[in-house]
Length: 613
Image (cartoon, rainbow, N blue to C red; front, side, top):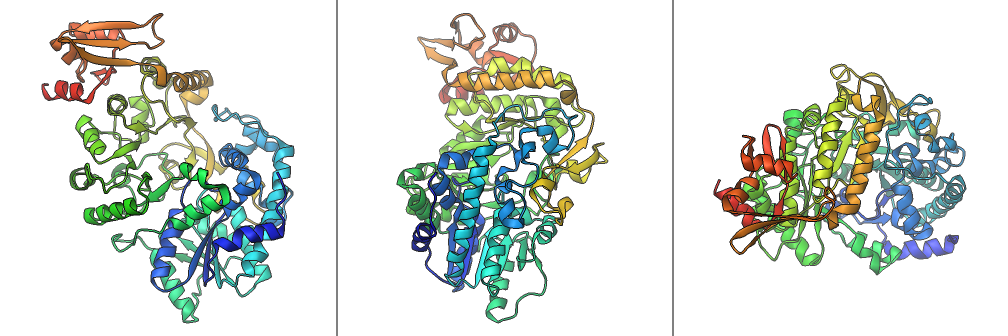
C-alpha cells in the first residue's frame, strides 16, 4: 500500500467537485458497490431549489488508496469486530489505534457479552484477525482523514454533511466533521442516515459537539426547510431535527446517479462499474409490519406509502434512457402488494424499462412469478429466512415451509435468481425445528441456496428489543464492543444497534446441530449449480433426470401424463401411490400436511400441470 501524499489526494478530490454551497459526503466503510440513495435524493431536491450541491464518495477514494480487496475485507468483516469503526476511533476521539481492546476482535464472546461464557453465534464468518495488517491500515486511515479535511475546508463549502447508514461509518463521519469544525468554525456541519434514527440521534449527539445538526427520520422536507432557513440566516435552534413521515413520494424527482458512477470510474477505474448497483425507491415502510412485524426486524416502524404506478413507470423509463445496460435494485423493504396487479402490467415486456431486483414477501405462486418475469424482475430478495414452519411462526413471517420450497423450485425453473438468508437462534426455538431443516437440506441441493446462514440478532427497534418481556428475553445489554469503539462519554445505550440477552433456545443449547446445518449449507453452495432434478417431455412421456448426490449414481424416471401431473403438483398429502413413491425417491417431500414437489421443469410444463389441476 503506497502512501498518498496531500498533493495526490488533492489532485484526486478537486476534479470531482464542482464547488458550491453544500457538500454531502459518503464516508468509509459503507458499501462501495452501492449508490447512497438518500444523499442523492437530497442533492437532487436541493439543486432543484437552486442550491449548488456536491456529493463526495470518500469511501471510493479510500478504497482506491488501500485497494478494493482490503476495503471489501473490512466491509465484510464480522459484526462483532466493528472493524470499520475501530479504524477511525483514534481520528474521531483520540482513542488508541483500533480503539479499546482490539485483541477482543479475535474473541467473539468478549466482543459480544464481555465474558468467556458464550455460545458461538457466527459459524460462517471465520475471518482471521491480523492485528499488524489492521494497525497499518489504521495509520493510513488516520493520514487519509487528516489530508482530506483541509482540502474540503479550502473548497469553501458553507455546509458539509455526512451520511451514516451502516455500522462502520459513524466514527469516520465524526472524525471528518470534527476536523472540519476545527479548521473552519464557520462551516455548518450536519449528519443523517439510518444511524440517526430515533434514540440513536441522541447517541450521535453525545459523541461530539462538532456536529451542528443531526437529521433523524425522513429528511427530505426538513432538509429543504433547513436550507431555506439557512439562506435567511435563521438557523434552527434544535440540535436534532426530526422528520415526519411523508404522505406522498410522487413529488420526488429521479436521482442523478452520474456523480456516483463518475467517481466510481475515476477512483477505481472504468472496469469497476460492472460491480456497481444502482437503486430506486418506489415505497417506504412495510405493509406486512403494520399487520405483524417480523420479530427480528430492526427497521423502525413508519407508515407505509408508495409511489403511484404511473410515477414509477415514468421513472423506470427515464432510468433506462440514462443507463440502458444497467439493472436497477429497488430499495423498498417490501414490494407494495398492489403493484402485482397494477404496476407489473404497465412494465411487462416493455423494452423501455430496465431489469429489476425487488425485495418481497415469499408467498408467491407460479403465476405471480410469471408476471414478475414478464416485468423483467429477474432477481428477487424474498423473505424466506427459514426452512421450518415452526421457526417461521416464531418470526411472524405469515408463511410456511411449503410456500418457501415452492418458491425456490418455481423461481429456478423460470430462471429468476433468489437472494435469501437462513436464520437460526430464535428465542424459544426447539431442536426438532432444526432436525427438520437437516432432513430437508440434502433433498434440495439443486435449488438456490441461502447467501448466508446467520444467527438472529437482537436489534434496536425490533420486537425482540421493544417487547422483550413478551418474548421472555432477560438481561438485555448492548454488545460490549460498542464501549470499545466509542469514547467513555458516549451514550452507549442510545448508540448501540446490537444487543445480547438471555432466553431459552434449543439451538443455543445444541450447537452441534447448528454446525451440521452450517456445513450442509456450505456444501449446498458448492454443489447446487451442478446438481439437477429436472423433468422433460420426450416422445409422449415425462422423463425425470436426477444427479443429486443423494444417490450413488445418476437416476432417471419415466412417467405417463397422470403420474407426472400428480408428481409435479402441490396438494394435500393423501398417501396416493404416486405421492408415496415420489417421497421414497426424494422427488417430493411432505410438509405442512402437503405433498410438495421438488422437481424443476420448463415453464410450459409447470403451467400445464397447474392449469389442469
